[in-house]
Length: 88
Image (cartoon, rainbow, N blue to C red):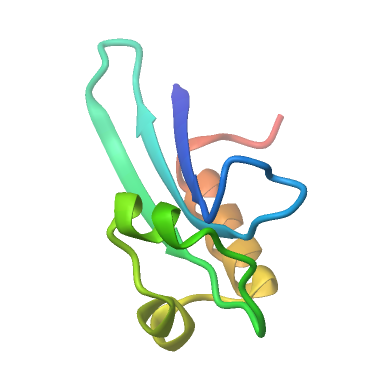
């Protein structure tokens, strides 16, 4: 199986701007989609470039209200991965 990952940040410099979303797609060797996970990140403060929000079509209020904390996001990703990857 293969994991495809895409992230959206609030600017081009990852050291200065917040991670806003992450998407994951699990595919098999035949490139069939096995599962998808989309995570919005909730932050107490967002460091953003307003142009990036427009490009990504994201709103800070929506991210804050529906996003996951880092711990919640980590748990969701672990559950997603365990569905498709055996522990060896």
